[in-house]
Length: 293
Image (cartoon, rainbow, N blue to C red):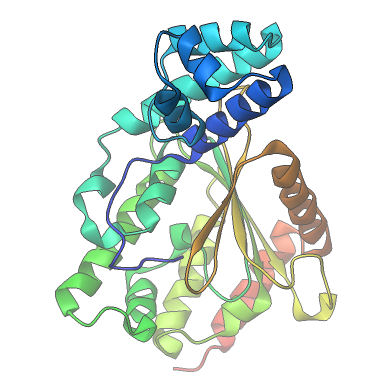
């Protein structure tokens, strides 16, 4: 997951951007200008521009007036009000990650994960961050080459370990992880580090809120062979899933319902081609026992 040191902490605007696009769509459908929309809420078109770009938190009174002005139906209005409420909660959150510059671009993801109900993750070559040991995470940070100060590397490791608190507690995060076999065999940090990492996978696979499956080599081609991604789901009925994926140089958020549904379909197809949880555990255990020291 992209953790560039050049990216500072900021409040998550993923939901605000999606809300802004919805408002823009409604305004276009109603044939209204930004100036007219601004006048309807006794403001200027510049405020509408900021709202449609997701740059500002949105007040319920403004949203209700705009929805009425755009002749939106009750369902659309309710959905936008709920999105606005969720976005305000994200912006107000004073999460631990906001005090860690090393969280970098990961901070926005952690803000979403911290309030999520469930995460589905597909990984090609890495163990999911929520399941990593400190030695494995440290080896990844060192091999990345971006971080040189040992203290910075240790803070990166601390961020990853802190995230894992969501796996336990009163309201644990549900995690459905599908991992390609290559991630189990790639010796990040060497055989001893990797063996402990596989033992950690066996441990977390026993948690009631974790479902872990392995896509074996012998499965051949599959729908998600070319990319990794995380699908974040929330408890609220009106909250559409958000998809997060990384490239080498950037982070991509998929924030609309239609595209998100495509990722869900591909995840489900890949999971069906993967080993069942019991067989996945057996494979992990076999690889772990065969890992030389």
